[in-house]
Length: 131
Image (cartoon, rainbow, N blue to C red; front, side, top):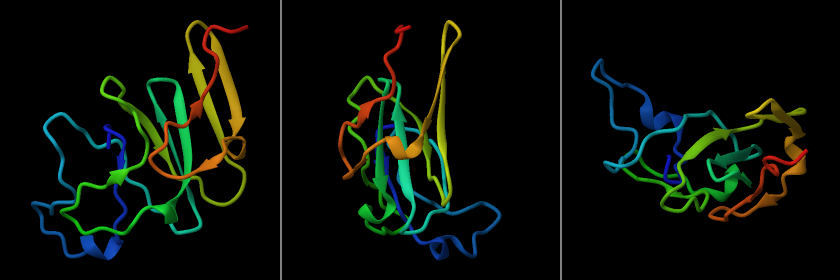
């Protein structure tokens, strides 16, 4: 979620959905869903914020919750920071590609981000404006 919460649920919780859908989580009025990903215990979750910070955690750090649950803290993003990306890198080599104006870009192997526990602030993504 955009407020830094992460919810882990079993896929079987969502079987048998009707045409009108079923509730997947409880959203607060000032929050939004960032993404939905299929993951296993062996995967890592990579989260980035608009504050130029990112955190890499293990999916197994998050408890499995029911459909009505809101989730648990994945990253401390603060009040003014909205989550911009969340990806679950599966096996093999994965990279983070960032672009920033004017004409700056960076490609970093996901393994260079240290594996941390959930609910941390993360690490600096890049020094913006540096040459």
